[in-house]
Length: 457
Image 1 (cartoon, rainbow, N blue to C red):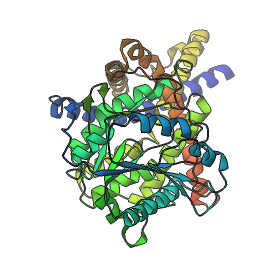
Image 2 (cartoon, rainbow, N blue to C red; image 1 turned 120 degrees about the horizontal axis):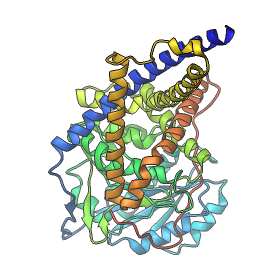
Image 3 (tube, helix red, strand yellow; image 1 turned 30 degrees about the vertical axis):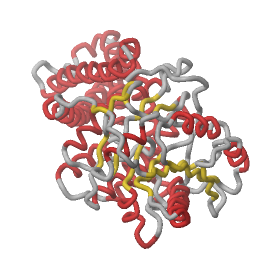
């Protein structure tokens, strides 16, 4: 009899967990479907643009690269960038720390007078935003000493593979736009098909659909922190009297940059421009292990969904509010998906118990036919098929059909990483709110590809 009571309690718990997960996933899925519909009905006629015709006198570009503990990649990245860029007027400002001599020595190996090394005043790591502020002040000082003015400030990281035509795109679209974001295309890592590979799927969908819809609806477009150019005058307005456009306490200064530019009336957009080698984009490697992927995504969720809520509040305008809500649901949605997986395990155990115990066979069905829960489960199953097909389609469009097929089972890996990151972000946010942790540059180790990449996009 005791086993029957246990089975009954398990049956009730399974029903409640199933209902909880079904409702949460349905709400999140409905939100995603709205963006899908906006993409197909508002943007289906859009195609990748073409490279702008060079002007008689292209503007000067300041490329800023913050570098903490980047000795393994910075020399290769700078060498590749200066050889690759097809543009006559630019300077590269690289931020280093006084307690990081290895990075400084690596930069010294690149003999190019277009590279300016900028040392921070404090030992690292500070926040990335603090390093960027040092670079901004160096850009302004260079203008004063050289008697010139930059047209735009371009953000990049030390692991980026930069497209040769990138600066031509920026020159052709600024200052008509206050910020231009180019796509970020993760490089295929054949040694990490599932962990690193899930970034392929997420960026393919985000930078082909989500961010584009965001801009089309008139909401602020967040910067990705790389492959992003900001009109120099607008960045100067953000800097103001402080002389610092970035808040050094911010953990996701790139995301906040786009929101703050929008608040000043500056329009940002993600542009897909087709060049001679495919879409003009930045390519880079992403974390290849579970722990490093969780670490990176924890920082993103902590800065965007939690700290960003405190810092930015709720912007005016329905489009901004809706997109902010989507950004902030990112810390909840993975946990709802995890609850769904747990509900499936509970359901499987419930089936075993009811088949094993004769008395348990008379328990009411978990989701009677025609009930609200049954309808939700069927709807979620249909929506899951739609989402998997859509993700596979975006991945196929960028990487080919083999990676597109892998995108379907990779969703399980992505869900596990995102759920672990959401739980860790909530824990860290609690520590920060209690004053037990300070914001820091919580970066992961970077890699630079050894040979030319062969991605088509």
